[in-house]
Amino acid sequence: MSLLMEADLKDIGFKLEKALLEVRFNQTFLFDELQKINYIAKKLRKEFPHSQRDPQNGALILVNPTEKTIVATLPDRVSVDSNNPVPFSSFKNLVIRSIDVTTSILEVEEFNRVGLRLFFGQSMDSPEKSNEIIKDKFLKITESEMNSNIFNPQVIFSTFEGQYGVNICIRSETNVSVQFSDSTQMQNISHNLVFDIDVFQQNTMKLDNLNSFIKYSSELAMKKLRSLVEIARR
Image 1 (tube, rainbow, N blue to C red):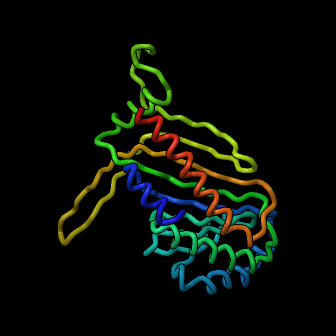
Image 2: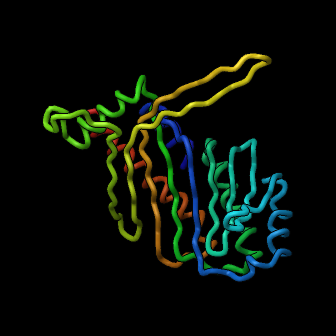
Image 3: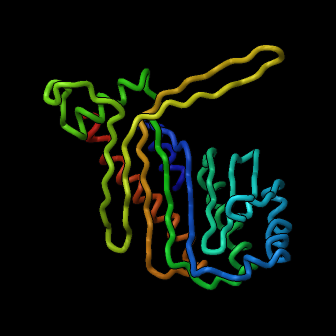
């Protein structure tokens, strides 16, 4: 996603709220070697100063609190999840660096699925406002037709563009955050209309092609977002 695209988001009143990149591969048994896992954490300590093992599934979790980014490594996949993916170029650099180091140490030669999931949000006055847009513009349904109230409407569908699959979810989200200042506590509540767009490819891919995948898939996600926003504002 270029700076031009980030400017485009601002022009249409949206923000990139969250980004998730995941690569999947055939299970590697090197993941069971503690020395390998410790070496991954050591090599990425500059970018991700905090590390731990997930006791539930044994995943290696690396955390960058400044960038609000987490890398999770399992025997058959690596994901990079950021709640602060702006500028997008910083997120992309963290993705390339962490997946390069991780898969090289685990001796992964190719991926069998790669996906980039982007969460675009537009601020709303209330969840009801988001719900009305979803019902009126995408579901084309009214409460009088249903003879009852409609709660939590969502639109979920999939499509394809060549070798790329696209999963799209449109929904309303309410987020609550708490800020502490001295002895005071402030609660912030935000309401968003969210367009959750997941672009993926299931063909075999080498690490060398990951950068071009991120570029193309982010552009494709923006293309889909523009079309959806146009529908929402008719």
